[in-house]
Length: 247
Image 1 (cartoon, rainbow, N blue to C red):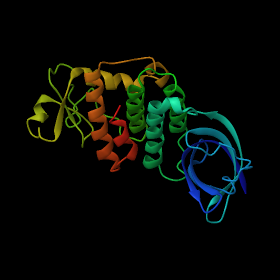
Image 2 (spheres, rainbow, N blue to C red; image 1 turned 60 degrees about the vertical axis):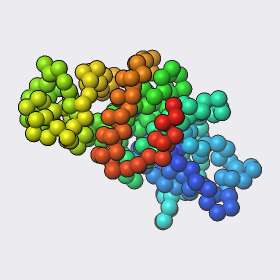
Image 3 (cartoon, rainbow, N blue to C red; image 1 turned 90 degrees about the horizontal axis):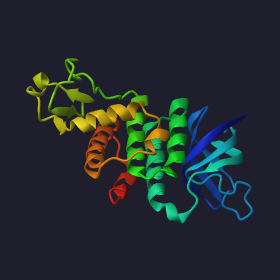
């Protein structure tokens, strides 16, 4: 059986003498793993279509043990020049997140479109870190981990008038003054700016965020909470996170 779908290459690994095993996040079939035979030969028909961060149309044959890539057509190569090292690193982090936070064959068109959007706008933005972090919060929201930022995540009381804000990583949201007294150690103090920023991120298209910038101290706070939140709720570690600390 053959099937056709749009997809973005998340991971590409050499296999035997001339083949590659690729992980592709597809629009219609979710994340799939497939083999491309003869792709590393000089005259391969696949060209660069199976390189990481490439958006292509894939014609795939359903195999008994592993699917087989039959044909490809490149739609967009997001990062093709060596001059874009920093932006490439943030893009690689985005696809690693999708790879590790999704299961095989779970279709999520919203998540696919979000990944395509962030890779597109990472090439144009002046603040790739803000765009990357915004993408992370939007991913977590789509996957069912949207933080509670208007009301206490424990008692559901409004936190609008509080002068101090505390974010509970485990429970996924802000905690009111009454509840914080009971368990302050499990919470991280955050600024009012952080609360307003994440609220804005969750409702703003990445195309708009790609044109924004925020102060360095605020980006550091956002990065700190983002890393703690994703690490706890995903129970995963990400290789590319360590590299991004240099930027």
